[in-house]
Each structure stands twice: as C-alpha cells, then as structure tokens.
Length: 179
Picture 1 (tube, rainbow, N blue to C red):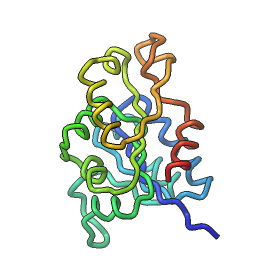
Picture 2: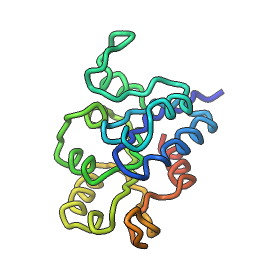
Picture 3: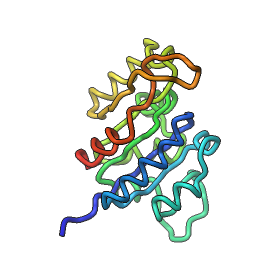
C-alpha cells in the first residue's frame, strides 16, 4: 500500500476561502493527510473549526499559538509536506513569498519547505493584472513554484474577468499529481 500523501493547505484572506473547505474535503477523500494553515485574514472568511472537521487534523493559525507537543511548527510542517498548496492565494501572500518575507506561519512554512509549492491565485482582475503582481508571479515561477489559474469568471465585485480561483476539481487534480 502506497504511503498517504501529506499536503499542507494554506488558506489566505480571500472571499474564495470558502472553497478551501471543498478542496480539503476532496483531498482527504482521495486519501491524503491534510494539514491546514490559515492566515489571520482567512479567519474572516472561513472558520478554523470547519477546516479542522474536514481535515480531521488541528488547524494552524498563529505563529506563536501554544502547542500540545513541542515542535518548531513551521519547520515540522515544512519537513512533513509532500506538497504545499495555497488556495486561495492573495496578491499579498504572493508578494510576501516573492520578497522572501516570512511574517506568519504560512510564509515561514513555505520558505522552509523542500516540497513543491502549488499556488492558486484569487483576486480582482485589476490586482491580478497589476505589473508588480505579475512580476512577483514570474519571480516565483522562476524559483520553481507552480501555479494553477486564475481563470475568467464572476468575481466578488460582480465583473466577469480573470482573477477567479481555478475550479476545485482542477486544483485537487493538480495537487495530487504534484504531491
């Protein structure tokens, strides 16, 4: 029997964060062990409890949360991962990663991991097409980070444009293929 794939799912502060519940659920149904890291901003859109129930694992939120067992969490999560998936990924987290900025548990974990990183952007089309955001994406691609989407669709602001997070099925397929 093959070892279960260990996937860290990073959830950032986007309206698309609600889709993370479906992504986590489907990855678990496919036999993956899923650990979730949420940014503080993500907690405005979806609760840690939802993702804890769906992953059947503790959800990590704060860099300095009290732990049940001593471990340097960002290093332990980074070492354990077969893949780190950020879904949704905001322009903010993309910029942090492109700059090497590690100011939360998610960015510290990603910077510490040797595993592949898959990023599923979700943002307004003006933000996505911004020259600096595009330069950050290109910088991460050159560093070996993988991207899926975004796609054209209805955005939170009501317009139809590129910026919508890729469909859950496509993200799950890509994640399992990379893990």
